[in-house]
Structure formats: structure tokens, C-alpha cells
Length: 444
Ligand code: ADP
Image (tube, rainbow, N blue to C red; front, side, top):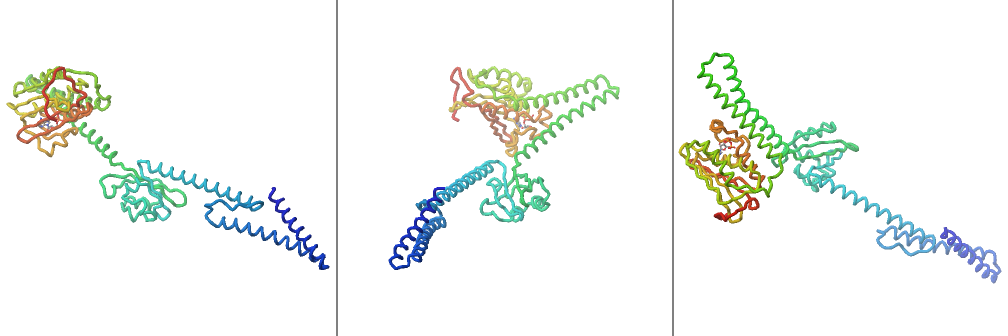
């Protein structure tokens, strides 16, 4: 503790100096003793005064914002200034580090796709992430300290807050928007509550689609199954003539084939969803696919339609042969199934100026009203259910075609005019098309 010795020494030297000076002056006046005492007092007072001045400089610095360096002092006050400054700077560094940690913590919460809101014991908003504000239609800054139930009035949410039972979930519509929110409220601290929000619009939509799909599949399978069961019962219980027996067996065969096509299409869809994207380096001659499609088409039409096929010259496609064949066969099959006898079905290959290729399937059938076009590729969507079923349709064909097109990086385009016919175009991107000879091109 050098400052302590220094401080005592200075006081002792001043006191001694004062005493000696008093003694010397007092000796001349014949009052040596009282003058020496007086000198000691003056010396100590001088030391105290200098001390007070230094202390006052340090005090002034401490009363300010401590933005400048502390006053340069020696001894006790110098030591005091250094230590106080060190403690202050350390505290400042701690505060900055805490603030940074808090900012990082808050930005991690902000990065979450789910919303977070903190409520005090009076249901006033203490803090609200941008996502929670967006979900609940709030302003994360302006609405701070507001009572949340004055701003979010969904009855289920208000009831949940009022019930004060911990850890419950409610679903409410998104305020001011279409969609659904899932909200969890959890108590914490001293009566405060944590509100977690999640947008479940997509999840609910997917769940509804899954439910619809299962219901549709069950319905589609149950109908032919009921018919077959009825025929089995008839054959078991009634003595049928040979002609009747044959007729019943034919009808049973029809229903069984219907179930077979449905299961086949369901398996195709499942394979499309579960398998990797088709290769871009496996090249297939379009003419080979075309020959197979034509064979099916002639069988289906049984000579009742005028048909024309143009597969281009030496066109090769990159992708999955089974998928592309299934897509083109579906489009051509639909054209023949929905076009009445005597109608025209044409299949034309085109390469566009941008290198992409199109397989266009055109018919002179009944056409499709515009309001149905956007929904045509949905699973089990049919414009005319009985016509579809009568001709062996499963309602899954265009869903498969669209899937195949997308998996190959292309798309399915549908144009149709009621009373005139339809045009389904399977578009494939340039990287999946190769020509051995130059085919005719058209403007994109
Ligand atoms: P489906 O097995 O019922 O034919 P798709 O998914 O292939 O199922 O087609 C969906 C619906 O689109 C059909 O039910 C039918 O109403 C309509 N459709 C498809 N192709 C044609 C076409 N070429 N002409 C008229 N309607 C069509």
C-alpha cells in the first residue's frame, strides 16, 4: 500500500514542517510552544485542504458521464481514480456483452418461423416478435404495453387467456387474412405469459387434402366392390341360365378392371411422388413411344375416330420412358374417350424456337367449360363423372400427366372451347430434347 505510506508521510512532513516553522517564528516572539502547536495545526490543515481539492476533482469526474479519462492524481486519490475507472470500464464491458447476448437471443427468436409474444400479469404486451405481430395483425412497436385482448378479439384466444389454465392450444382464424393460427399460451415468472403462434394454414390444407383423398379412394373402390359382391351373391343364391351367368361374369369383369385401373393409377402416383427425378441423360426415341401410344389409341378407338400422329423426325427425349409413355397415353386416351364417334384426334410434335418441345394432343370432342380448367388436374376431379366412369376413367389421369410434366421440368397446358374441342400440350424443356436431324420449329 505505497499510497498509504506516502499519504501519512506527506501529512507527517507537513505537520513537522509547520511545527518547526511555528517553533522558529515563536522563538523570536518568545512563544515557542504555542507557535509550534499552531504550526502543526496549519501543516495538517494544509494537507487536508490539498486532499479535499484532489478528492473534489475525482468527485466531479465521477458525477459526470465518465466519457473522458479520470483526473491525473498521485497518491491516494490517483490510486482511487484508477481503481474506480477500472471497475466502471469493466461494468461497461459487461453491460455491452449482456446487450449483445440479448440482441442475439432476440434475433434468434425473430428468425423462427413461429411467433413469440410476452405478456405481463395484466395481459399487456411486454415484447412481441415480428412474426407474432404479423400473425396477430399487431404492430410490434406501437402496440407495446397495450392489453392484448383489446387488439386480438378472437373469442377462443380471449377465453384461453382468461381461463389462466397453463399450457393450452387453440386455433383461431388469422385476423384480417385467410388462414389459420395455432396459439399456445404458457405461464412463466410472476404471472407473466408466453404466447407462441404458428401459421397452420398449409398444414391444415394438406391434412384436408389427405382426408379428401382417402375418402375419394374409399368411395371409388367401394362402388365396384359393392357391385361385384352383389353379383357374387346373385350367382350363389339364384339358379342362372348360361346366358345370364355369362352376362353377370362380363359385368363382374368390368368392375374388376375398374378397380385394377384405379389401383394401377394410385400406384403410379405413389411411385411418381416417391422416386427421384427422371434422368437427364437417358435418351429415348419419341417415335418408339409414339408407336406404343398409337397401338393403344387404335385399340381404344376401334376405328371410330379419325386419328393423325406426327412424332417429328428423329426426336429424342431425356427422361423416364414409363412416365412419358404413361403421360402421352393418358392424354391420347382421354381425347379418344371423350370425343364422340366420327371425331378427330391429332397428335403433333413441335420444337419451339427456344429449344423446348411440345407434344400437342388435339380433339374435336365436347370441350371443357372454362371454370373447370384450373381444377382439371386435381385428383378425382371430373367434369362429367358418369362419362368418365363409363369409359373406364379413374379421375387420376391428368394428375399423373401434370406430375410427370413437372418431374421432367416441363408443364401441362390445357386449352378448350365448349362445343369445339380441347388441346392438351405436354411441354418439355430444351435440356431434355435432342434431335438427330433438324425438326421444324415454331415461335415460342
Ligand atoms: P378421367 O379418368 O376421368 O378421364 P382425367 O384426370 O384424365 O380423369 O381427366 C379429368 C377430367 O377432365 C375428366 O373426367 C373429363 O371430364 C375431363 N377431360 C379430360 N380430357 C378431356 C378431353 N379430351 N375432352 C373433354 N374432357 C376431358
